[in-house]
Length: 71
Image (cartoon, rainbow, N blue to C red; front, side, top):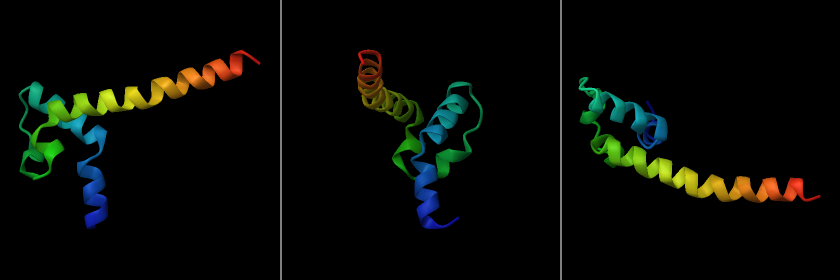
């Protein structure tokens, strides 16, 4: 895999959630050999991705909803 795509895949929130699920369910984690932070700490990375996405999209959705319903 090219280096750019590998970096995107390693920092992808879906990869972090999948790796966290495998770790929490006790399945072997093949991503543990990848030396990026989200693959080494998948549960924390999943929580941080969730908080970041909520922090970005809740205000955006609220603003768009208010703008479209008040007209």
